[in-house]
Image (cartoon, rainbow, N blue to C red; front, side, top):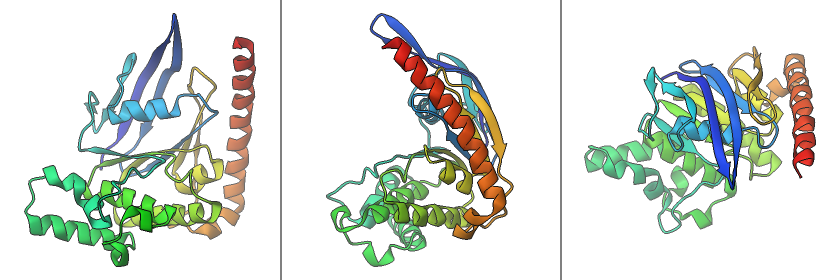
Length: 263
């Protein structure tokens, strides 16, 4: 496991003759082995921050460190789960999961054992010889998570991984992820627009302001673990969700007003 530190991160993009400041002076920490959610209005820079942590983009100013080392490029210590599973349709489940291991210095039996163990852990052993087209949306996303776990990264960066799922499947995937992380402790930065999801999953919820995105507020989530769907009926859960909803709504109103003024 490893911690993630954002240190006064600023990111600007060029848009024709203009420069757009996506995020401004973002400083936050995700301690080792903890789960942090990032929420905020559309366009506040959530995915930008995740891309910088992944090494896909460089900050205009400031820096991101993982386990004390500055991020300058993608690396095996970090893995990203996107909204779309991105599976190879011509490969079966076990082949998709094992694909990242092709470049690892492991013997063929070691790779096979690792893949089999992870496929079993995500509950897809009976489907390991199936192609992605033969799976449901939730099952495909489980394959995507299994593929990331096969790499055994210290940090998981998750960009709205359940957004495309129906409500019931989404809740099941949330519980699945929490059970998985009980067994395989990782440091997680999770991007979502769903405030209930953010609170249910996280130890700490970071709320972003309207653009340029800043950390508006940080909410601790003292709900006991392990969490189940019953956790969503606790008064403390609703108090935190209500608090987060009001802050995000306030920032969303600001973002709409700003976008209207620029139109």
